[in-house]
Amino acid sequence: MGVDTALYSGVSGLSATSNAMNVIGNNLANAQTTGYKADRSLFSDILASEVASASGSSQIGRGVGLATVDTVFEQGSFKDTGVSTDMAIDGDGFFMVSHPDQAGTKYTRDGSFRFDDQGYLVNAMGYRVQGYSIDKNGNANGQLNDIYTDLSGSIEPFATTDASFSTNLNQDSEVIDLANFTVDSSTGKNVSGITYGAVVSAPSSNEGDTVDLSLGDGTSLRVEYSGGSWSIDGSSTAFSIQADDSDGFTIVNDNNEEMSIDSISSQNNSPSVDSYISEIKIDSEPADGDNFSVTLNDGTTIDGTYDVSAWTWGDTGRYNSPDYDDSSNVLTLSTNKVFNVADPNTTSNFSTSLNVYDSLGDSHQLSVYFTKSEENQWSYNITAPGSKIEGKESGQLVSLTSGDLEFDENGSLISGGDVSMDVQWANGAADSSIDIALNLTQYSGQSSLVSKSQNGYASGTLSDVSVDEMGVITGSYSNGQSRQLAQVGLAKFANPNGLLRDGNNLFAQTQASGLAAVGAAGSGAGSIRSNSLEQSNVDIAEQFTDMILTQRIYQANSRTITTSDEMLQEVINLKR
Image (cartoon, rainbow, N blue to C red; front, side, top):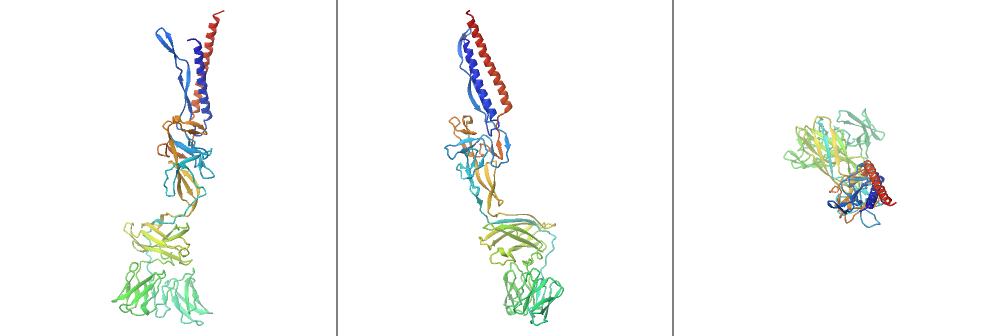
């Protein structure tokens, strides 16, 4: 072979290093391109030629060629962006995107996504991100499709079905005793122990007539008929008079709250008493077999029978058998219901509240009152405003349910912690059935609410989205609730170097790459980092180093050409 072969070897070197410099330049140009993967030049020698030598045949190379431009799919670093829909893949997978006006799926490592005006998750070029939709029960449909969410959508309300309180009741709380009230029906006007007042019959309605009332707190009120109405004559300011049309009057407190106790009728011995009256003086001795009833102000009626000189109640769940003293005609009522819905704060030791929701999403405040009846014995009463309850009047408190609580000597709740109640709302919502877990302790120390919870909520509109490491997109709503909306899908290739660059940070599948293995994020193709983007994996220092080396190689190949040229010139100069 002649010197001219060296010329061609030098030319091949120039060509190969020129292409290598193009690769380096492209890498540097994309040093800030999101998700960009650097290329590298791989060279191969050109088939050698055989020449005769002293030892036989030998081979001399004919230069170099660019074998391939290989993509380096090395993980890039992550940059926090603060944008919830920005995503980066930590792993080998690719996002899948599809344009609505084009067939086929493209693949990318660029996770700079956003929701468009139609609610689709798209990239900067309008390609829609592929994934799996999730229904309101949290189930993925398993079918790959465009990720979509209704940005103007709302989450429907959910009526409360379960609630709980974690509360400590002070073991040192004072026991609230049953009131010892006596009603003497023989005169119809001497009433003792009435905390708020009573309806009684006045002897007449003549100018100057008076009626004396002995109150349970030891004070006495004189009521006088003057100027066509009854008025209080005394120093007490806690009561006022309301006259009726039947020569009677009602005593009420400052809050206009009335405790009505009708006069006791001797027929069937049927008195009507307040819910915590414990003694009733009847006006005649009962006969064996007589029936009687006591009607409480909360609407409860207790039926009883006098049988063989003993009183018995028909309802033994709340009241013990009464004790009758025939020497004074006093019937003593022993009850575990100390709480009075008309005077909740006085007849309870501690209270707390909880908001629950009905089927329409309306919020209702329930109040829970705890009353200590004896050592290690408490009762609870759950109430609601009357305006919220079907058939009840506004301005009154309504008891929804009540029960007893028992604690052991260690302050642990023994019984009474599971509560179930049905509520009929006044606003047209469906009736609610609510189970309430009372997680209570009775330790020394201030009564206090530790925690409370309930599972209902009002309706709400979508306010924000977030993405977890499994690619699950979760919507946050204005009512404080959240719901999974979709899950991002990822693709993985057996030979990612076989992918074809398609511009705009996209790759296209080829026969060399193999078919995409598709699955949800976290299933082997990598996990998702939200609020982040993957940086280009181009190492500028490395590229500059390669640039210097490539330049020197280019210079060396050019010297091969110039030197070969000089040698040829010498051959030409042989003939002069």
